[in-house]
Image (cartoon, rainbow over all chains, first blue to last red; front, side):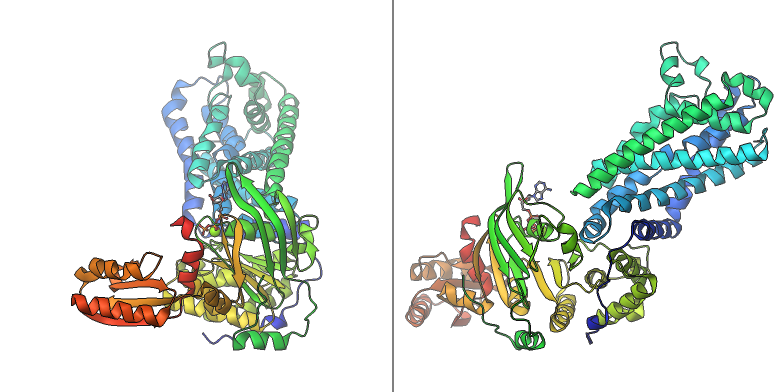
Length: 272
Length: 334
Ligand SMILES: Nc1ncnc2c1ncn2[C@@H]1O[C@H](COP(=O)(O)OP(=O)(O)OP(=O)(O)O)[C@@H](O)[C@H]1O
Ligand SMILES: [Mg+2]
């Protein structure tokens, strides 16, 4: 190889990267990775759309949601809980395994900012499948009953929920060690989705399960998005006021985000 | 410890190009320990990598090479001992160390979905370069590692050797003073290995200090001015490749038989010549045995083999290779 030495022309940077530059570099690398890996884009969106179609057409007829059309009941749930179907844990485990995390830890980056980049990218990927699901939802009869501002607020909440769950997934990825294990561990969040008001009304569950379903985060989040997207009359059926759901959903998001961002960041900074 | 004499032209070039003889050692480790459960990955390792040189850390699987590199790269904290990198205390000031090192770990940590250039720009940004400087650093490194023509192709289409070179390049974009290469050529074919050696030599000429780990003696022999052999987390020998070879002291009787069937019998005939057992290499139909009194034992060997009527392709006496030094020093493993 005819190696002409040019290293001398590079000078070492004067300052280490800022937190923003660090998160930005990792986020933009990861988003590019997603954009160029069709499987990731397609599988994420397809899972969500499949749930939509199966529940809409197969189970939907058997589920009684009262004054709310089942499709209007379902789409807000898919959008609010999408972050729990994310492949973020696997991605994190892959980055740990490939040696990327070792390289990142050897660089003069603010370590607390690194995983923020991952969270941003994972949130973006989840929101992509949410958007696809909503578009398909419109095609199969979904209609927004509330005003446009409320719909916008609902979408904003979905972004917040996705961001909160992305930290949960990052943490699961960090503790799992290998990509396969991460994939397995990701399924452990499924009870959170199914034992909630996401697909069926809580009242249809056995009595002992109802308090669990009623008071867990996904029910609050799904309730908030539903309350904001259906018309005011139908919202009566939900059992609580819009603000009751929204306040609880916000609190839950902040708690999940704070707990798992702290745990993950500590674990990453401490090293392997 | 043996004082190292630069023994290659390359080392002299390097020495001439840097007039900093009073620089602190690139790495100075004293009594480093690191325990994983029952395993002592580092068991009181003392190691000095002099400034202005290529130091090779040589050791079998599990010797503690990667653990040591990770300690130097501030990826893990040693349990005990002191560790200074370019004069900075790595345990109390890890963030300062990260600004002067470049790490290429045992796996090529490059992202297949990104192009070679994108990979380098990302790492350059993470070193602290601004956007334009990051792009310039990437360009310069791409030229240096010979990947300019492939810079805008996704890495998933790269060969193993190209990925390794790119990974090496990623450790260079921050213009580090000390480069840490953990088994940089493992898994490469001989031609690709030669190419990578060329890249590493060019860097050394440019004035970067290098610490590399390897299981290949030949690699240490080719690239390093200073070799530290470690085993079970301890340093067991140190010196220049020439010194280490001289240190083993004994010559080697090297025999190649014509018919593989004769290997066993020939080994039996050679066994009395040495306190060490003969080493068999069946695919090459070779037998080697280290001997104390070279010429006399060679004569004995020829006499015994001809008396037995065994046909030989080759027989001779030679200096030991680093491989043999290494095997002798780590013999308790075998
Ligand atoms: N994270 C870890 N947890 C438990 N044991 C570990 C860990 N890392 C290393 N070890 C053990 O420490 C010892 C030294 O490992 P290390 O990876 O440093 O060896 P090495 O010289 O790099 O080997 P190789 O040539 O195979 O890369 C080994 O016995 C290994 O099993
Ligand atoms: Mg290793």
